[in-house]
Image (tube, rainbow, N blue to C red; front, side):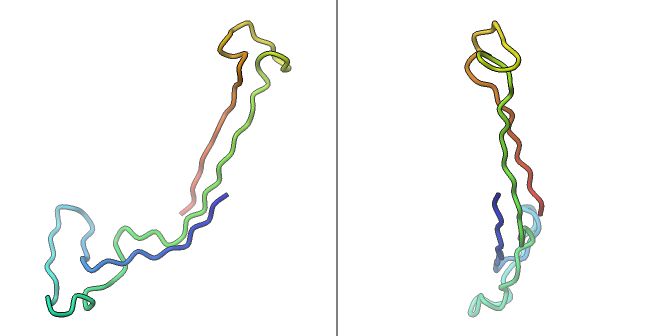
Amino acid sequence: MNYTLSKGLTNMRVDSQSQDLDFTTRRNLSLDRAPSAFDIHQVFQVFGTYDLPIGKGARLPSTNARVDRSCALSATTAAK
């Protein structure tokens, strides 16, 4: 499991690459400082694997050489 808390700040408020905005003033760039349009504040991720009972010495034996090594399922999910 993984939980991330973050805050993305930028001095250019655009929501895509095609938009182009100029600074309010070049003397004090911090006047344009604000949260980014692409900011994701919180992310919770879960990773997992499950070994399949297939292959040599398992509940479901196999005659396939590739399957005899190891079989597993893996999954990843994220909640934003």
